[in-house]
Image 1 (cartoon, helix red, strand yellow):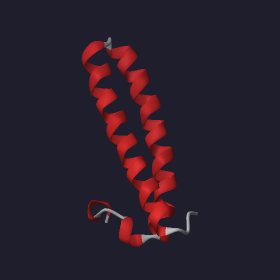
Image 2 (tube, one colour; image 1 turned 90 degrees about the vertical axis):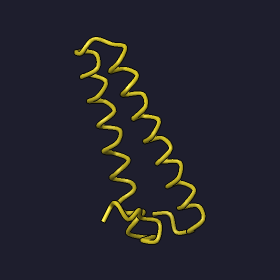
Image 3 (cartoon, helix red, strand yellow; image 1 turned 180 degrees about the horizontal axis):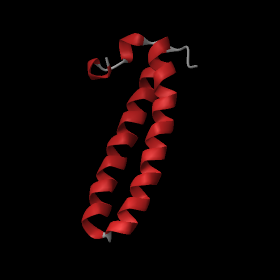
Length: 72
């Protein structure tokens, strides 16, 4: 995993930014597309977010000071 604390924090910030943008995209697709398209899109976004969590969990293990309090 990423050993450098500064780089780890930058990567964490980027991952959280991406997560926020993915969430925003869900709202947009939900509001503008038929339910079946939204469901398919939501499954893909869920998979992406799951993979990101699989990356962040070891990063937070390596750098517990970066882990948000809400994740406890």
